[in-house]
Amino acid sequence: MKSAVSFLGAFVALVRLAASEAVVGKADGFAYGVTGGGNASPDYPADITELKSMLTDNVPRVIVLKKTYDFTQSEGTIVGNVCLSWGAGHSCQQIIQKDCGDTPSMMAKWWKAPTIPIDVASHKTILGVGNKGVIRGKGLRFTNGATNIIVQNIQIADLNNKYVWGGDAIGFTNSSKIWIDHVTTHNPGRQHYVFGFEPSTGITLSNNFINGNSTYSTSCDNYHYWNFEMVGTDDQITLKNNYMYRTAGRAPALSGGTLLHAVNNVWSDNGGHVLEGGDTKARGIFEGNVFTDINSMIADYAGRLFGTPAGSESKCKSALGRNCQTNSYKQASGSLNAYTDTSFFGDFAGLHIAGAVSASEAASSVPKNAGAGIIDVSV
Ligand SMILES: *[C@@H]1O[C@H](CO)[C@@H](O)[C@H](O)[C@H]1NC(C)=O
Ligand SMILES: *[C@@H]1O[C@H](CO)[C@@H](O)[C@H](O)[C@H]1NC(C)=O
Image 1: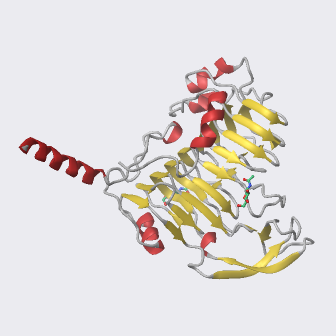
Image 2: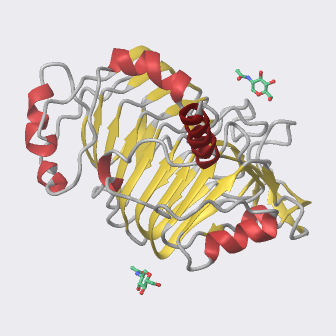
Image 3: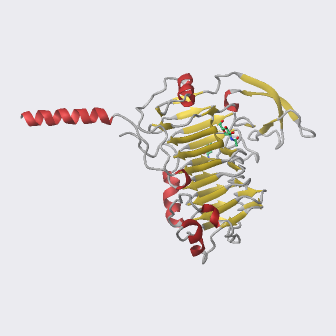
């Protein structure tokens, strides 16, 4: 009897300990080794003010979101000029801009808060519980040398989505070792992910849901144009297991001096184009990806690229230490098969390389596993 009671006591203690949250898995690819706030005991911000202060102070933290933090109205409104560049239709985006030239324009009002992101400080983990961790009307940015940050299982949504320049969901410029995992972004004004000119290295974007089904868009048809702007002068980005739904452009814009490894992502229902990028210094390997229902694969691309046409898989060994997986195309106009440049493969030396499965495995696993609300961060 006595031993049964003490067993029960130990069990209760275990259960109490278990009421906590922790990061699920580890970063694969360039952000490998990131620890964020490490094993700091969780903080549960009470409101938007506390969330902002916990994200920006210089204390390593594990910040757990169990509810919606709505910043939308918190900084008031801005009144200004907008250009009706894609018409005045109900679902057309407009551009916040002082001078529209010959383009019709009008005065409009938008929220201030989404136009100014929170600059997250180093050594933070931001974790959402279930599908409850939501930030509305405010983006997160990693800059000024910010390093060692994990964001997992949250949603960032609704940043003046009617207006280009209304707000980006997630931004990087001058940052390192950042892992964004199982994050859903929806209805930003401009980019889902934006990289500024100052180098961001050791970045992994994995298992994210880029929901481009937007209320307002540049084509007035609910397909979001502004998805991944990669223009950093010397960035390293692993893009793995992400689900890009209803995009229309910049998916990605692979430009600047970016080094990209795009592996096992799924693009589904694209209404414009996937790849673009005007700079010759951009470099990318695309392998094991799935392109389904794609209006156009490439708008213009000036950089170097390896698109893994069938028969070329073994060429990747010098870059990745293993064979590449071929990409799969279904109802896609165009492909990346003409891109066979391997001249930049030495640039992967010393970087942690993400693993790959076949495109057909990615096709069945990625759409149902991407985004917030899928994994369980409670332990
Ligand atoms: C990055 O940020 C750090 C810290 O603020 C600063 O010292 C450095 O000059 C910045 N680097 C660039 C390229 O701007
Ligand atoms: C897109 O979003 C709208 C508004 O939330 C929704 O009614 C519609 O079903 C969505 N369409 C698709 C194809 O996901």
